[in-house]
Amino acid sequence: MPADTSPAPPPGQTAARLRLDTLVRLRWLAIAGQSAAIVAVHVGLGFTLPVGASFMVIAASAILNICLRIFYPVSERLDSNRAAMLLAFDVMQLAVLLYLTGGLQNPFAILFLAPVLISATTLPPVPTMLLGFLAIGCATFLAFFQLPLPWESGVIEQLPFLYVLGVWVAIAMSVAFIGVYAWRVAEEARQLSQALAATELVLAREQHLSALDGLAAAAAHELGTPLATIYLVVKELDRATPADNIAKDDITLLRTQVERCREILRTLTSLDDDGAPFARLPVTHLLEEVAAPQRAFDVEVDIVKGDCEPPEPTLTRNPGILYGLGNLLDNAVDFARSRVVLGVSWSEDQVSLSITDDGFGFSADILAHLGEPYVTTRGVRSGEGDSATGLGLGVFIAKTLLERSGATVTFQNVAAPETGAQIRIIWPRSHFEAHRTGRNMGYLL
Image 1: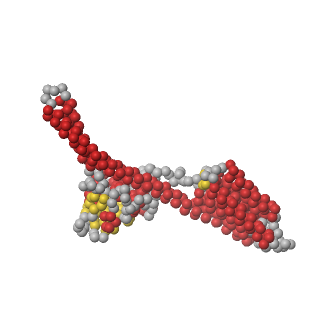
Image 2: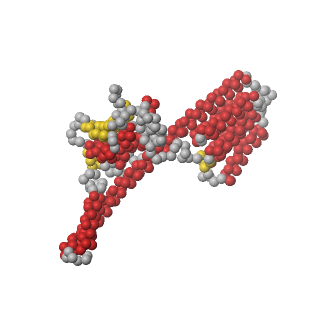
Image 3: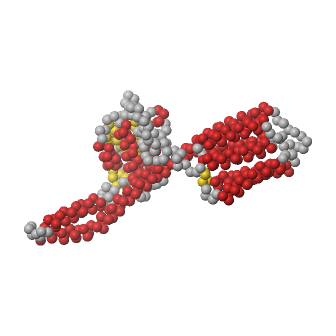
């Protein structure tokens, strides 16, 4: 079935901005490390290097940090442009420091990767790509222009250019590979976080509706007694009022409206989660409830029971399971030619459901990714070239809710020569029958 649409923001639109405090703290850490390295090389090893100029470059970073602390609050969050500019400053500062201490011959040249990695995990692709080009450009400059590598007094150490070229290639490849890899991992994490948030909103809505059912039932119980009294009084007034009395029609109307109110209250009482006769329902009734809204369309929806061992499993009405099954069935109806089959079977150990349509089935490139957030097959399975319009959260939300209830969800195509898609949902019977009310579900996010 296709990854249906669910209201959710597109990837990247709601990504959290980078906190200024994070960059400031990381820069203080870099300042401490750079200072310690210069002191260790100059004092500890006795190597000659331009200490004054080096500490001036480090002081520039410290001054920038102090200014940021003064003019911006700790909670300030940066947009991508400002964050990229601060990271670009770090690249340039490191390049100047390396220029004073041997260029790419300095083993600390590998630190060009740090700002690019930070950008890849927090910023959009374009600023990260520009920052990577800046780092490679600085590395290219340092391959040809730099002060001598700090060494023992009176000794000028010059490494072969082939070695320097190898370091440049390593930095360029690392910037490209680590930048792309880190961005991809972070983007998947962001998408998953957004999709889980959408799932939580859907479940919260379903639980709210379930809570309203309980409130309605409680109100029905409280209103039942006074309404019964009103009904008796109106009934007696109706009997005692002559037919030619001017108030007869009004009393009769009042009686019919009171009867209607009593009927409404009886309906509301049946929604009680704990005491209603339909609060706990057999699995076949569950499927009937899921299938009922889909039978208004042209596609035939059949429920087929396989080999089963009595007794039939039952569960408490569960918003998460109802929503998940309803979403998958809705997708199946959308892409079926004429028929969708809801299969059910059970044994002492498990409860198995299947949703099978007679459509075109899943395409090979989509099948492996179904159930992941932002994977949609809108327009892929219809065979009519429809454009994709969904964000691909429907199947993800349904699969997540069903798996949180203890189910295993798998997607596959119907075996040839038949065509169509099939979704199998299997619960351990103990999990299926253990669910209680929608307000106390074990799969809460």
